[in-house]
Length: 89
Image (cartoon, rainbow, N blue to C red):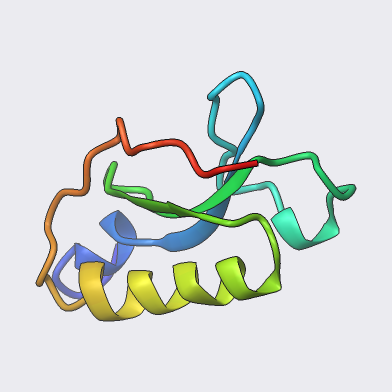
């Protein structure tokens, strides 16, 4: 456990949303999956926080990283809706 427990609770990553709506776990490296495996990328944290969906492409991946660092890690956006609108195909 980290000095204050925060480091163990907050481990962010870029998750992928599958066609059936399920979201990948921390062990899935979305950059190594086949094209069109995911319909969207989302910033996600072990604490349960889930960011907004972004296109499943390199720009969307980097946007998720930015969202995780700038929105969740700094506490400016404590809870994004897990029922975020779908990303156009």
